[in-house]
Length: 249
Image (cartoon, rainbow, N blue to C red; front, side):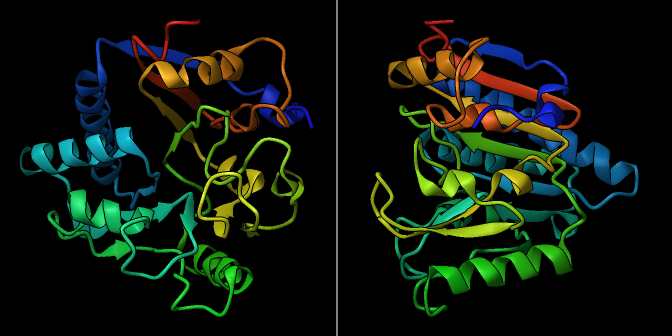
């Protein structure tokens, strides 16, 4: 699989490098709050895609810290998740649980759309179907901002290198089994759904991400090897990095 003509014709990615993970988290949180506030000022209910991981957690905590001065109406923001581990709802491995603990509950976000957990759905396929139906019923058609972490192997959401999930089409969300990163069962948005975002923000911190960042931004390469290459924003793609993650570009 290579980038489609549609995604390859989109604006070239921007790269923003910060001194360290702390500075990166503060910058991204501030920019996210500005984007949400601007959208609301224009009379729009923004759809924001959240991700999991260490740097995302740091960003979420910064959002909570900066929220009181932001002017954001948290009841008029829709939050979504790019992927989720298919585990019980109270599992600490859940991206949704981490985001709620870090900022969603503190700011009293009301429109949080979680992917069904393993104790809420018969199997990952049923959870993917349910989440797809929610996206169709409640979504605005795309994400205003979609944040994505990138794994050391180049995966995004739960789309892993050389994994069957890369080939799923005509679907919003799909089940993932035999994930190379535990837990083995997950639910992920597909490339088609991820590529409906207006702004895609890749988030990467630390030396362990440097090679994946290099491959994600290289002129040549395949989506099979580096799935991050398969996602870009309609109007903007930004790679938010710290100096360690950017060390090979």
